Length: 173
Image (cartoon, rainbow, N blue to C red; front, side):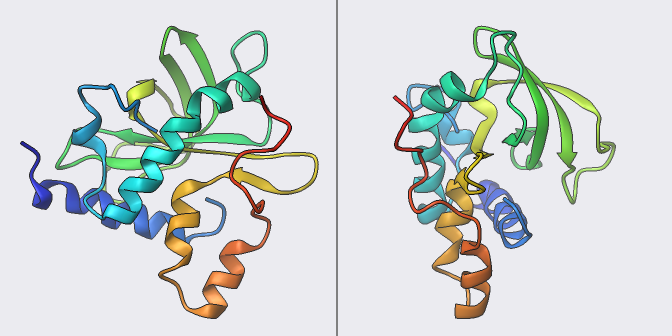
């Protein structure tokens, strides 16, 4: 049974990351409940990101399994209650649901991680994804989109800058 108090630090860390400029767990994963934030709005965003993750990976990985330029993944480092999200880019698919990425935005509380450091992770640890395409818009960014409603009008306007109207490009199939 998941403990709400054990997941609260994850939600707080996610919220802190989402206010910063630029900002998925398979539903069938046995680990999914351990990683979802306790804030229902953010948990829904993680679920939506996971639902579209296979489509993202189909379109954001080149033939060698490397993530395309302009894309990144928000992964969960560590284990609850001490887990914390971090952005990785570039990232590489190593095998079935196994990845490796370079930390591009290290966690705030967890020490020992540096920008550029390579970390292995499995698909169940991916909380969110985003990609900026040639149209200059950022797609994905489900957690940032979820957080916008909680911001002041000025902050919300800034957070919307550069975001696509819909999280998934219409031409992806």
